Amino acid sequence: MDIFLEAQDKTGKLDKALGGLGTRGRTYAECEKDYRIALNKKILEERAKGTPVTIISDICRGDVAVADLKFKRDCAEVMYKSCMEGINILKLELKMLESQIDREWNRK
Image 1 (tube, rainbow, N blue to C red):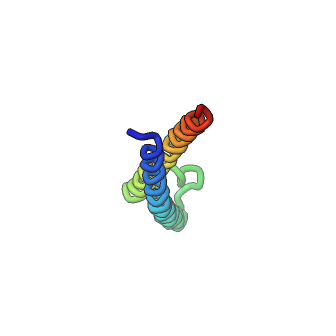
Image 2 (cartoon, rainbow, N blue to C red; image 1 turned 45 degrees about the vertical axis):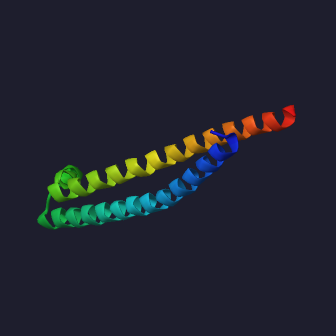
């Protein structure tokens, strides 16, 4: 494949990945919000019941609904970070292609 076409292809993929990063970032933020709200509600419920403060955290985080929201949040975080890593790889590949293009132009 021509170096210029390959660079254009990488640039297009980078643009698409950046759009995906925004979507994944919003999903991650929503999951984080949902988890924190559920955890807060559960902590307040346990306090109202008179649960000892020393074990409230463990009890609340072990609640099925709260743990499920934390799992969803963690999965969203992984997707967000993997997208960021993909962007970094594309940027590196693009820099390598740009260096190769510079060498080609300076050789002539």
